[in-house]
Length: 227
Image 1 (tube, rainbow, N blue to C red):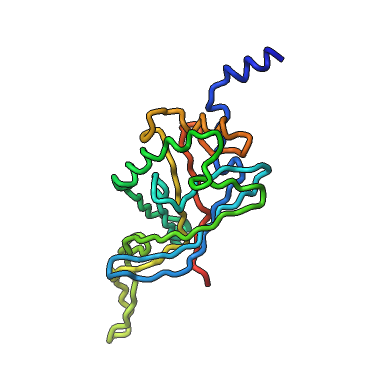
Image 2 (image 1 turned 180 degrees about the horizontal axis):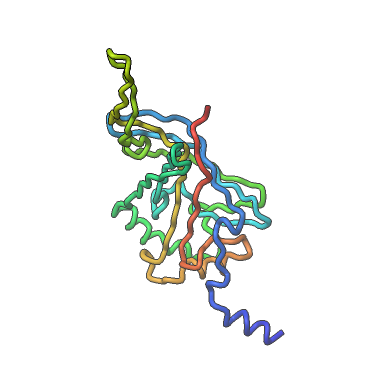
């Protein structure tokens, strides 16, 4: 027994790390509305749902609060039928200084003996948490305009057929997109092991989905337009 305790004490903290995917967290999204805010911008209102499909309780950071890193990336996928492959257009969101300062000042509240009710949610197996996400991106991420060469044939006066090429453009919409949420304490806390310590301290209440790099990340399932 003493040997087992020593092994647990000497095992690196990262050994307890498990990602959201490994713990059975699934993030899905439904488009509530999609409209053009201007000639250059497209706006989406999304209903996002985080569901625990795993076997034990999972602690999630509340994505609706106005602090931290949160939504960091939107990846739009276009299906190129000619090459039978997907091309992606990735939008990376920059975090403003106000949110970073809020995160630094609030990180200390994550050091409690139990998860904060305001900043976190505990999802038992089968439970879910939903929230509204408003996403605004340039239309270039939603539409793909590419040059195309079209072949055309014309029947001449003498009855012969002339073949020539015409260069034009074709426009296609995304087939689906995904959203990535990320919370990294490494840059904003004086304690670089804060998330790992939280993971162990809060173990009686659930598992905290932290990767080996000390980052809490979850990416949505493909989000498509409703037909």
